[in-house]
Image 1 (cartoon, rainbow, N blue to C red):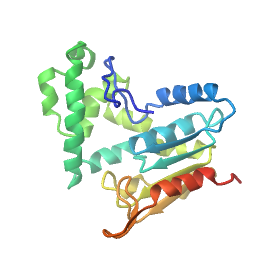
Image 2 (cartoon, rainbow, N blue to C red):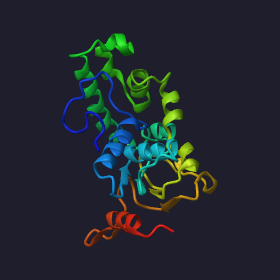
Image 3 (cartoon, rainbow, N blue to C red):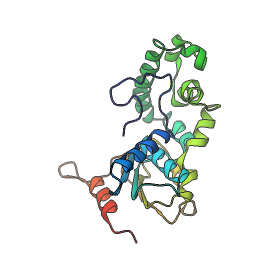
Image 4 (cartoon, rainbow, N blue to C red):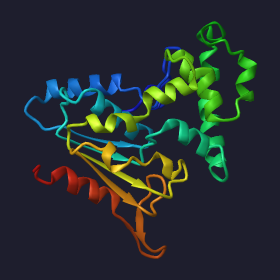
Length: 232
């Protein structure tokens, strides 16, 4: 499932998507279950989608239609990640990602009175320098949050981990350049259904072993092994 506007088609609404936007995913899962009522459904989320998936599972522990789930490199504390992305080499990635986000926002001014909706003048879009400013200027107000911090607080998945009852694997690396180790949950924050596979190295959705001449891409195999393993 793609978030709204991430398929190459423009989202025709003033709103977009965000890191805790679990409503569309839940509706999608319910639709798949209705279509394939006798089939087991598994979900795998990457990065922002991994945070959303964990939040979805924790929000609806007794209504989960998923057999198992895997979250890869989830930004489980969005506030910490926003700060990390504004430091060091991570600012390069922030610049690249912000360029696309600001371009998409600019296009919305052609179809909607965005200044009335979010109180941001079109010419001020280019003045946005980091994710926190973008989320405070657009993501938060257009999706009903009071501020960027309100959005981060309500949508960070770490607070939902204790409520998850679906067998779930989180694959995360301590050297993820998009966040710091402060996002990593403590053991007591995990429910008995959640397994955290924490590695020293792996980057962001990387997890390549071997060497540059003979790399081993083991992430996909690990995901499939977990999903197909018998549930105890």
